[in-house]
Length: 610
Image (tube, rainbow, N blue to C red):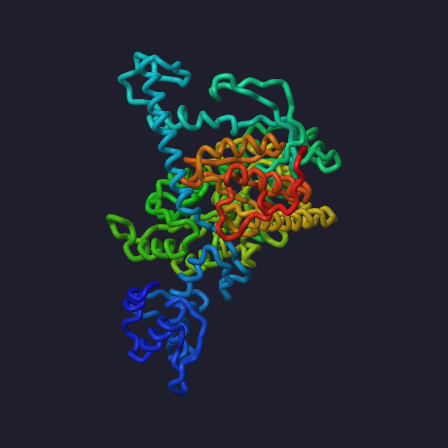
């Protein structure tokens, strides 16, 4: 907050208080209360200083008569846990510093979103300009018949029709994406554990089509699968119960839950999920994507308001659009932006009628899969209570992956799961299976059993898949009589911190929370996307690279997913390859630290050939 903002917000302060504040902000000194001497004090933000001065001036506050909570003045709002509005905003705005918010946060919250140097941004945009220019040139040559057209085109008799696809989407696909298309959709032919086998393929027409060579790349280190706890495995002893269910129930159910597809294993799974999360009830679904997209429309509709994080997964975005509710987007993990929208929603209501919204639903994720950031859940819950909104928490990437016992971001922050109205998660990542769940109050789950499109129309989960989830979840909970599940959770946390710490030391820019197993490494320049993935595969390391439109146009990246099944030797092999490749491709953009890898001119001993 600047001086003008302070003047506007604190215009009612006495003149003596203003003098103290200005003297401190200018010179870092505060007049002594006993005399005229000035005493040194650590510098703080202006708003934090104002709060401290007010506390000294006013002394301990007490509630007004007949009211438990002090009512704010000048249009302010009552803050959770006795905090001031500016204090809450300051705590919510810290992005790259450790945040320990006392009564709101029970642990240090460290996230990093370092900005690249200016020249990197210039080169990134220049790369897209060059690629786009050559794309238009190639389109011109295709139109003139000078270059063969391989991409699908509209039939001659449909030339006057409205195009089925947008022109720029086709342009981007045929001229930019196809150049590096070989880095996606690679077919693997083994379990996606810490290592996998990959079928080799080549292209004879610049990635328009592929053919298999018949060769298999063995033991490729898997740094891209969401196998957080390592339950994607083929150990016969571990999968014994899954095989039993396969022989007993078969491979499919061939019906919905509301008809003939409600098995006793489904009921067992839902009871176990509710116990695992510490809530009253849960409901399982056969597809994680559909868990969001088909259940959000059952919870909100016309006359309701959805406040969605700008980086929410497409399943949340689709569910919000299908609901018919009004959608407003707040900046990623930005508490001030969210509170501003909540204020406007409460004050102004619906756009035309000005009636109050029927419901206000806040959509957030536990771990954001492209940023590696963790939701600021304590502050969001505080806003939810203050403005009487509902919170829908998608824990697809966080359930099993964070928290002392793998129970997600709710446990990570030491919060009560009943504080979240709708808990959603998937079984496709930490539990090595398929499907998703909705959990919360019994009334919520009973309502969804009747009104959810997924429950009414989607086929039920196959019994072997259900058994795999039960097996993995019991292992994490310790109900199998061992501590293997807890050991996996701890191994994941240790691997995550080790991998992130080493990448920082090597000089790469990585995004996200220090405890997030999703580790985005920024590549930026589009030409480096394909070069990075191809050269990593040449070193027998499989990675996932991501670019526009899945990310901002200037923030292409490689996304690593750390697993409990990764050994320290595997991680060191990946880090050594990254260190070498980072120097070769000039990827070490971080200005905070330098690489630990010695350069040629740092060598002290040379051996010359004869």
